[in-house]
Image (cartoon, rainbow, N blue to C red):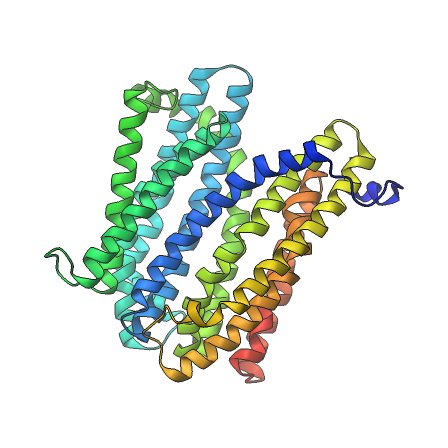
Length: 437
């Protein structure tokens, strides 16, 4: 049933009893923690590289966006694998689950080869899409060349995480991710600044840390799965049995739509970065600082939105239309309240947070403060659309509308307006920034 029809409901606006609130916490907290863990890796990387120079920050900002596009594409592939594994698990076909995870890993690895090759041989061209500075292109290429190798390990971790979600063991992948983040933080400290007798590699050290931490995370995951004789501990025979034309076709039919959706969305984010970079390298530096702060601050909203998808979806599945409508309203009110709290907290902490980036020059710091203020406002503005699109509308079955809304607002409005403001009307970075939200 479409959520559209729920607008005629006469149920009171707020319908969240203790049982529902408990369900929200049980769903939202793990998702929020996973999102915080994912975003904190980028934040710590930027904070450490931020101690070096503005060129290093700008190079990492562009390279990080390019790497993010590749990771999101692999996430799309893994999502298709998760849907396939969930179908087998629901049918109590454990061999099918193992085989689907093995196939997810093989296809993800094959897909990863393309961006790895692009970053290794043409990384300077990728960075050049956003910056004309030869110094930034050289630094960014060096980072992409080595950090891109981590995509091989991301392909494996993504396949396992998708499988674990499908068999209701998502918390396990959170622990593996947490280990990877701690290791990344440690190796950053070692190789960026040359501690414990290691060479001082600067930005390249951050790339080395990414590869090493991802590699060890995979090793620990494999050891755990094998030692526990886990369902997802696939073997070579599982891989070979999965490589059948019919199985591959079925996998592709599930994974392709999601992968294309993710690619278009992530590609749009990189396009925004490219537009901003063409207006000057200072904008890239500030964007490198603001982006991880933004991702971290939106973690709480992401948790609420995903919780709303599950709970409202459950009510719709049980034909409790009025409860679904009133709970949807309740989730929107909750999202607005929490984003207001996060926004005010961020604003009050602006000085110590921006002070973590010691490599910023005075002019860049002043520009970062303006971006930071717009970020605080934008977080609240996103509360309604994020909750509705990520949660309520998808739970109501309006998946196509959500897809069209995501892509049209980005590619038909946001990106063209940003390009017009930057290239045609010559607007300042601050006046163009609302187009990037």
